[in-house]
Image (cartoon, rainbow, N blue to C red; front, side, top):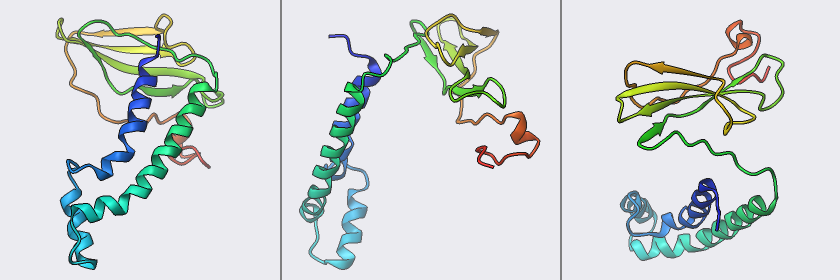
Length: 168
């Protein structure tokens, strides 16, 4: 059965996410029990789990429906980019082609860690075809650590013509 990795991850999250609130292994469970005990002195783990069970079932059913709709919607197949064996891919950043670019028209920039070679690459991909040949690859002679979260500021944001997220 050929199933894209992101589909497997999405299915796992649908099944795993809603039940996290009722597992005794949840990190925040002791804190939640303490908060409940402020209002009901006899509250314990069973009280919290029984109170959260209806919400868990509703969220699980809703997420499953959303997942099935997404899976059977039949939109274009996902694109996958394999960086190579023993490599890591940093957080990708979308960069619009220009200020007037249509939704999704632009580039994906990410840092690839080549661990065996102890170096990194800046990979620039066409956002419409990430599985195709890269637009550019910048080989760095050193290894960068994992990249942080980022946001691309276009020329309009830098000139102050729009706010940070471009909503003006």
